[in-house]
Image: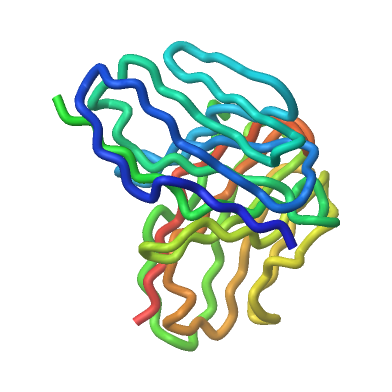
Length: 111
Length: 113
């Protein structure tokens, strides 16, 4: 079974701050997903990455396969970034279609 | 369609009744996934389809839960003899294929009273 740990659980930031959310997993994986869940419940896939770094606008995701660790960074944070950020990985020995989800990091960005 | 469509968006049912939840994936997406999220809890995988077959149904919590997909399109998640612990939002998602970016529907909120 793959264990997924996210930190911090909750994060409050001032608008403009640089945000980092961390995700660690216990077993080697083919790819890791970062998702964003809006306060209304809707979920959006932000990144899927298997190595290195990806960037989309103010969001950057990195992964270190050897250390089994990924980070999601938000530059110049804005109140509209307030959401729950979730990382997800396939289970050990499981199918690619299956995902184990972290408990999420609840981010609140104050104006 | 433009996105993943789920119906009903909200359903209140009495304990012991059967419910059906429907998912219309993005056109052309061969992979379809069902997840569950109980109030205040994280996401749980239920089942996924590649085409019309379900290679992994390991997340279905009991034999009261079943799902099917026809025509490599619409999928139905059926919960028989609903229990209060089945109350949750049931999320459907689809992707071009397994290993591609996943697109989520808005979910079906199920309340069992």
